[in-house]
Image (tube, rainbow, N blue to C red; front, top):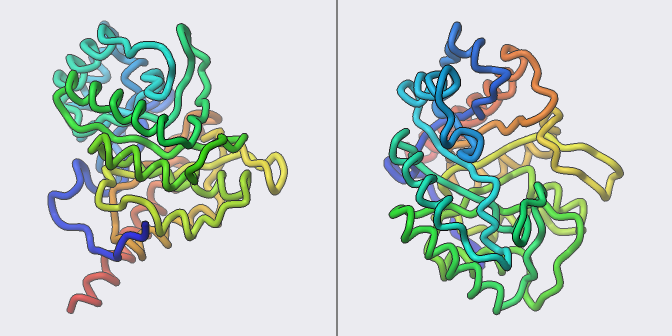
Length: 290
């Protein structure tokens, strides 16, 4: 599948611009000096569901001021255990309470009857497509909203008759869900498995993009990259983001940083870089249209 070039249309995305994950390490700084270059924020709902007191008030402070997207950690949509409907009910209340614009999860699984705190690859088979798509549809029915699936980084290539990009397209088509595009994960997998990152990018179901992640990763070896979200973004990953904007138009993009959190001013330098690249491509699109 090769998607055709297109320009983003107004109202296509649930959020716009550049985003930043709301981390506990950043809350005080962001309340004192709200960053104007941040257009939306992201939280992992598992870290906030049922939280009250000062932390709950802090979250409400931000969700009243910034559009919110939620990126989950424990749905385990590809796992063997039944989906947790009690968790989904609590998740729905959280999303509704805070007016979340989007909820996304990983196209992977993270355990059986327990939490592995890691993302395990799903075999790329037709049977897995049907299994995962049915579970996604169930989640969408319970949450009463379309969700997004993120392409994940892997360190062992799953067996199966499909390629990764064929599997991704088949799942989101059958489930009729959105795509949470992770630029860094494309690059990581290209190095870990010898994939062609540009060809992968050409094959994504671009009309289904909700928003994107960009992040740093750890270089263990040239052919082993670990998706840590704890380092600065590499030039090659920035280049891949540019290639995606050139191919599909500008889409909302969030800086994902989970470890080694630097001071806010330093972190915002990478948000500024997202903004600069978005504006450059938007200007190029406008010039082309004119």
